[in-house]
Image (cartoon, rainbow, N blue to C red):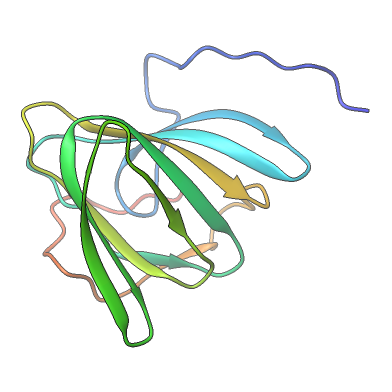
Length: 135
């Protein structure tokens, strides 16, 4: 049985996500992992999809939009504090921040984030304004 874990949100980003957002890595167990994502005001992420993981995001602050596409199904939703969204495996997605403060979310990755090469760039809804990372 794994030991209990506790972690406070790091002040500085742990990495840059493949979509270009700041990532603060939190905790993980065998079935999933949790991270904090943040995108500065006026920024648009790189559009990506995942090979093997799905995610659930809960937005904490900021104002923006999330674009998601699965085959012929496509939608843009407004995201701000209290909005929760799913990103099933293979979904193309991109988000942008246009409020006065950063757009921030906590994301649960199922199974845990496997590492570099999991995310791949796809054509998106908006021109990205950030550079992709590797997380």
